[in-house]
Image (cartoon, rainbow, N blue to C red; front, top):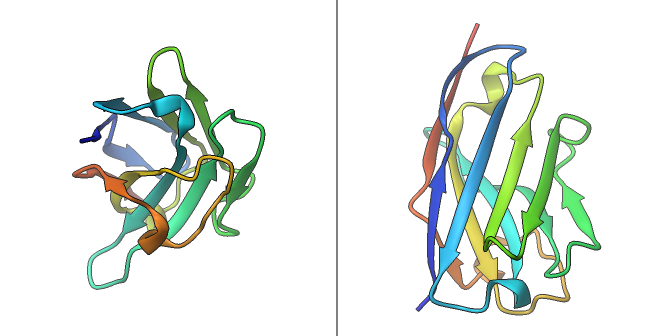
Length: 125
């Protein structure tokens, strides 16, 4: 069973930066597509970013493109989300997810097989 543990969330002022990390164990990390999703209070979970197993292809939600960067280190079984120029509307619980079909990106949450418990990101004005 794959376990995903997110870290790096916190409180930051608008315009600031955070780096989220997601460490994986119990599976073959290098074979998974990895994604980041987020859920704000009262809203549905939404796609943020994804990266294929080898890191060759990435995709971003339009709302974060140019501000967020997803990357991975397969030697460390870790995926990262660098978030710059944060806005109040980025406030949410951020979830890391893994998809066994590592050659295909997906922006759809139900296509991911494993999920972390989430880390809170709060952006203040």
